[in-house]
Image (tube, rainbow, N blue to C red; front, top):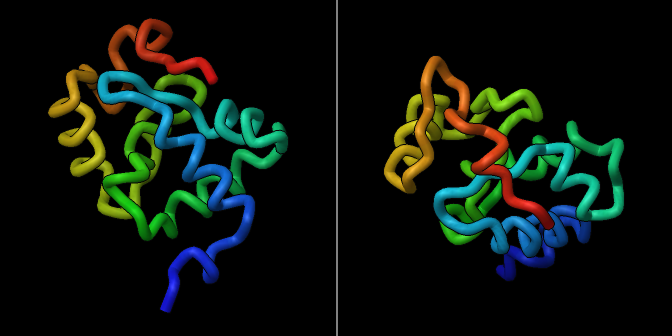
Length: 106
């Protein structure tokens, strides 16, 4: 069965946008929602990423909260932090170090 047909157009749009975020950078749920043309849909972004069947090709671990906190992850917060650190993103006390410098602009 083709997984693309099971996924909403909004989710597919998010996944395509998220592929643009390079290793060593992060974006926020709000920035991703805005880039998708739905600036008030941060929660919907989180729900779509939680169901991401294309990880790690679609790097949902690179999406964090707007205050720099790591936020949730289907594989657990510890795993998200480990992946981010492996990509060169420093995390301390579950917050991105030098958050503003790590932000990816769409």
